[in-house]
Image 1 (tube, one colour):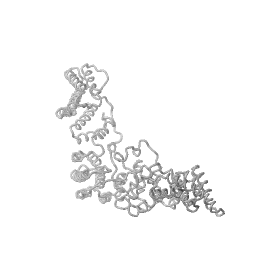
Image 2: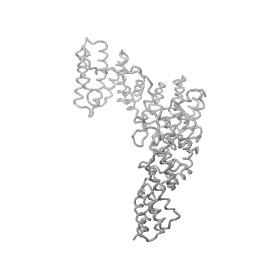
Image 3: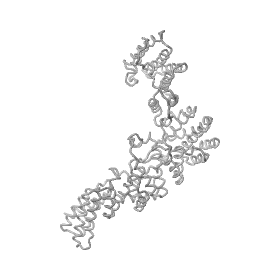
Image 4: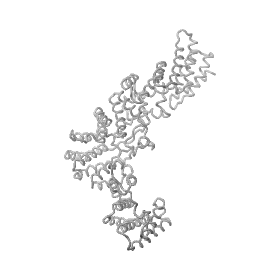
Length: 619
C-alpha cells in the first residue's frame, strides 16, 4: 500500500488547480463546492484522550511560606510583575512595569547568593532568572537580544531540570519567547507536544488558547512558508497539513496561488519523508492527509484512487473523515449513488459525532435531489429540522456568514426544508412521505404543509381535518369558516348578486386574515424573501433553475391572501359595475393592494397599475 501511495504522491505533484470562490450561506449548500471540501480541523482535533495533567504553582507563584527570606522576597517581586494587567506593556514601557522588573532583578541577585536554598529551590530560582529576563525583554519592545538570552537560559534550564512541573512550565515560556521572536513553527510544535504530554503542568485551556493564538484557523502565510519544518514527526506533519487544508469561504487570487503552492510542497514533503509514516497507523494517517490534500487541490479522481488502494478488510474504511472525503469526491464526479453509500455509512456509524451526522444528512439532501428521489430528500431534510438545539454545539455559532471554526456549514435557517415543502416537492410526494414515515419526529410539519396546500386550492374542509388531527385548532376553525364562505360563493341556488355578495364576504375574510390562511407560518420567520433567489443562483442546472424560479413565483402568488382577495374583488367590480357592492369591492380591493408587502410579493408594476385603475374608477 505504501508503494501505491508513493506513486500517487508523484502523480499529485503535477497537479495545479485553483480553488473556486464564493458560495451562498443560506440555501442548497450541498450545491456549493465549498460544502464538499474536507472537514475543518482546529487544535482540539489533535488532542489525545485521557492525557494526565498536573496543577503545580508556577515558579515564583507559590503563596506558601518558605524558610528562605530571599526566596520569599523574590517570589513577591516576580508576582508584582505578573499582577500587572495583561503582561503586555504598551507604551514601552510603563514606569510601574520597569520598576517592578528592576526590583525583581535586585531580589534575584540576592537570592542567587543565598547558601540556604535547597536543590528544589535553586531550580525555582533558575527558572525565575529566565522568566525575569523574558519580562525585561518584553518591556524593551520585545528586544531580540534580551529575549535571546532568556531563551538560552530556558534551554539550559531544561537540560538540567529535575522537576517535571517546572520543566513543563519552562517549555511553555520557551514557546512564548519563540512567538515573540516570530518563530511560529518552533512555538507551535512545542505547544502541540505539550497538549498531549502526560504530566504537563500547562492546563489544557492554556495550551489550546496558545495554539489558537499562534495559528488561528489555518496557520496563515507563516505556516505555509514553514511547512517543511513540521515534517520532523508524524504528529507535527499531520497538524500542519490539516490546518493548511482547512476550507475557506472566499480566497483572493494571491491566496489561492499560495494555497496551491503549499499543497504541492506538502505532496513533495510526504514523498521525501515517507519514513515518518512507516507503521500501519502512520500509513493510514498519510492516506487521509493525501486524500485531504487531493480534495483541496481539486482532484476528486485521485481521492477515489487512494480509496481503491486500501485493502477491503482495512479498518481505515470505517474512518469518518475518509467516508466524508470519499462521498465528496463521488458527488463532485456526479457518482451520486456511490456518494449516497458513504454518507449513509456516516449516518449509521457509532463513531460519528452529531456534527458528522448533520453534515452527512445535509449531503444526502443534495444527493437525493440529484438522484430525483424526493421522498428521501425530504426524509433527511426533516431529520435535520428535528435536531435538538444544543447551546454548546457549533451549529449555534453566532458569527454571521463566516464559516471558520466549524466542522462544516449547513443552512441552519431551515430554508432547505421550507423550500422542499413549499414549492420543490409535489403534493403526491408529500402524501407518499407521510405514508412511508408516519411516525418520524416533526412529521407534523409535513402534515401542516399539506393542510396549507389544500387551503391554497380551496379545499378548506379537508385542510381543517388535517389541522384538527395535528392539534392546530385555530387554523382548523379558520378553515371551517372559510369552507362555509366558499361554499356560498358557488351556491347554484343563489342569484348572481347573492353569489357576488358571498364572494365579497369571502374576500373580506381573506383580507382580514393576512398570513393566517395561505401562508405557512411554521416554515418562515420574517426572512422568506432572502431564500427565494433561484433566478440568480449559479449553482443550479438550467432545468433546476427553470423549475425553482417557476415554483418561487407560484408560491409568492398562492400564499398572499390579500392578492387573492384583490383578484376576487376586482372581478366583482368588473361584473357588478357602479353599484354599492361594486363601490365597496373597489374600496376593499384598494385596501388589500396597498397592504401587500411588494418586497416579498413582487409584481410592483401590476399592483401600481391596478391601484391607479381602481382609484380612477371610483372617481
